[in-house]
Length: 290
Image (tube, rainbow, N blue to C red; front, side):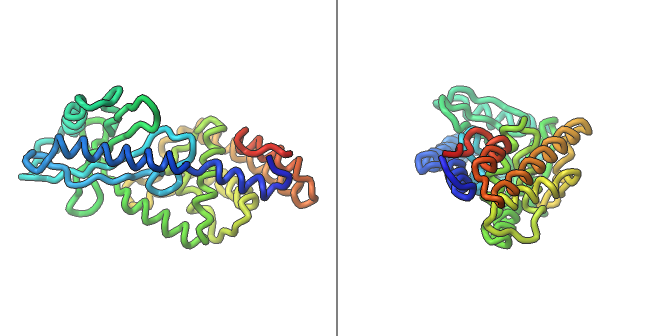
């Protein structure tokens, strides 16, 4: 509990960070995944594993508690041009990865869309994105319908790191808070879309998170379209229907209105009211006044 709004925000930011134990779990799951794949796809295989890499919000340090899933990219070597075997049937490639892992001590192994998921008894589960490296740049990832799409998590990581540095290392804490806002208000926005929205919303960013959130909610409303920084995914908002866009904009306006009132309450010294309003925006994990 806190008696000032800045103190409440500082406490809240710490609540969102992974604990040391959770960080160890993430690293262990990634290491285990590499070992499972290396055992099945060694140097003698026609599909040898080249490397694995933690990707997604866990790698970009924008992941928040509670832990659910982590993403691991598995890059396979195009030995003897094996890619041609799967050029028109990426699902078979995905199923081959799934079947090779079925004997390991995991609860369930299954193909899900574009990834193979390792279900553990306790979270985090692991989504494996099996890819080939394109000679022209980026990675070939199964698209869920037999073909391939191009993605580049390396560029995504570099983009977010650069924007975080340009914004005085204040971007990622804001992103984590926005993810909690998104989670407690119907989780309408995809994680990376939300990250790029935040990275695109600011030309400068100080350490006043209350002001930053109000500005984000105001700026992003009716501005949900942002491009994939890697140049492959197009408009990152394309998954939203018109109705869903309307719902997101309604949520953003509601958050903007409450944030404006909360900041006004803080300016006049009414921290109790400010904290009450921020708890509505950011959920019950936000510290109560006390």
